[in-house]
Length: 174
Image (cartoon, rainbow, N blue to C red; front, top):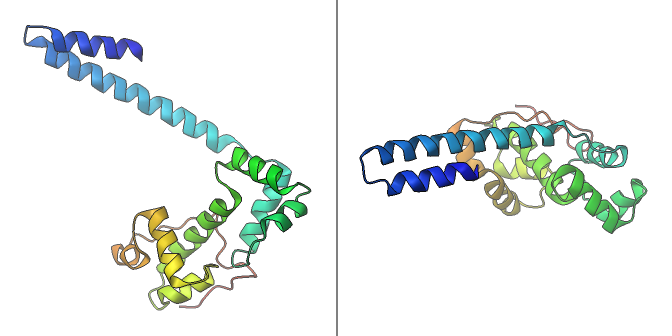
């Protein structure tokens, strides 16, 4: 990639009219290489599977989506001290345990937002958020939309990693 930057700078400094075209082509090649590199890195991340201990925590989160989570209890359940659990979880998933749980809850909320007869507050409580205000804040921080705006867009894409119909969070009928 460093060769692209040198080529772009040299092309920009050329007095003839060809410099702009060469610079544009070099930028396009640089972008294509960067996109390929990011795609490879993303594929490498998605190919990783969590260790059995971390998978146990993830399974618990998915099954108990609405439950209050005590990080130290979850760590003990996995046979780890809290600080080690937190570090290992982040290393293997890219998220802290609570960030991961929030992502699961948001994914479940997206699914429930497709059901227009459920209020935003019902969805917030059904997905483990303590209040509709906190839910709206977390949802907007994660998706860039308020739950109401997301619902109105009609883009309630499903994320099957979340289990909204878990025993702790029974599914709501339409």
